[in-house]
Every structure is written in C-alpha cells, then in structure tokens.
Image (tube, rainbow, N blue to C red; front, side, top):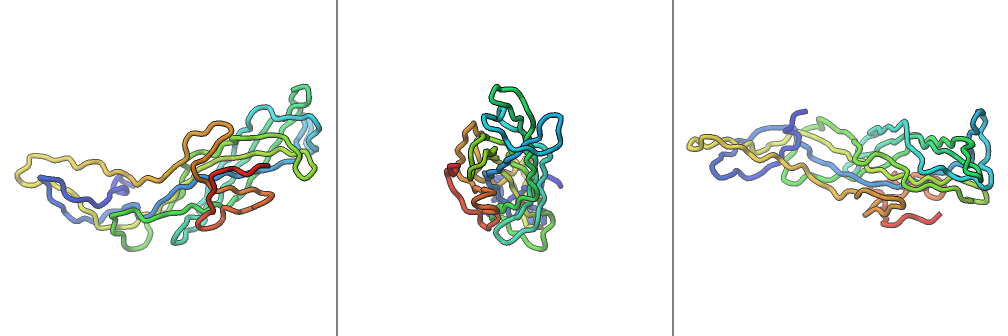
Length: 237
C-alpha cells in the first residue's frame, strides 16, 4: 500500500492548486488498551510432564514472559473491530528456599476483544472496504504477577497489558496539490495520520489512562462488547 493511504483532505497551500483525485485512504480507525487477568493453579515440575498443584511457600521468579502471540481480525461492526488474541504465559516457579522447581505455562486461546473505531475527520470515503486490518500498538506484557490464595487454592495470578488498533480503508476524493504555473516548484507537507489516546510506558505495577479489564474468573469476555466498558483502576484480587 502506498503512502497515499494516510492522505487527508486539506485546503490548497498558497501558490498551489487543488486537483481532485481518487485515492485509497484510512476512513475509520482506533486503538484501545486492555488489561487481562489470568490464573493458574498448577505447574510442571522439572523432569516431569504431569501438572502438579502449586506447593505452599512457592513463589514466581520475576515477571513471566509471553510467547506464541497472535492477533486475528474477526470482523467489524459500525463501531468496533473484533479481534481474537492468543498467547502463552511462561513463568518459573521457585520453592520456599528460592530454588527453581518447575514451570507454569498458561495458554490463552482466541480471547475476544473489541476495538472501537471512529471516522477520520475531513475524509470523504465511498465504495466498499479495500483493506481492513488489526495491528499491535503495544505488545502484550505481564506487568504484575504473584502467587496468592484464590477461592482457597494457591494460584498464580498474571496481569497482562496490551494495546491493539484497527483500521478500514476505502476510496475517497482528496485534494492533491500541484504547483501553480508561476511557481517553479512546491512540496506539499507530509500528511499526518490520525491519532488516538494511547497507553504510556508502564512500570510494575501499572496504571493505565483508560482501559478495559477482562478477568477470566469474575468477568470473562468482559471486553467482548462494543464499545468495551472502560475503567481507570485495576480490580483487587
């Protein structure tokens, strides 16, 4: 896709003329931040393949990592793009003496999330959608993890933060600037893509400006709504 996908309508600059042109442009787009809370009550001891309950006194060794990440666009409505997100959380478990004893592997498969999208201002789009894609703004990361008792069972609790975007492109009539006859040359300014409030770079623990929380125990698929409900604080486990 050429750079014209981000062209927006604008008034001619002094010394230029506007020549109407049909270009592929971004007509609707948006991005959203999400917090997801995942749980695991078992781990795989080193040298074994059998899931075992997390023992008393065990802890996590640092923040877990995320692997096998994927995002798939699962259709759009007038207000949202629905995506299916998958990833695997991998954590090292240590015993009461701090010695590694095994690995916790939490697989998250096809988690549905809704990304609100909005019209890009000053763009006159028409015709069918040419391109509709979801993309990663901030790669999923575990920003908080701990071992605690949940419903009377020792449980690893993982909080994952991520931000995704989505856009639709169509044809539009745009103002393509050309030099006036009395001007030797002119260079139109580079178009500026639309912007959306995003997540800052977070530390541990993190506080998002605005996000949707999905808890697989208390509110599963909470963010599979359009628009997703927004909060400014994480729930207490």
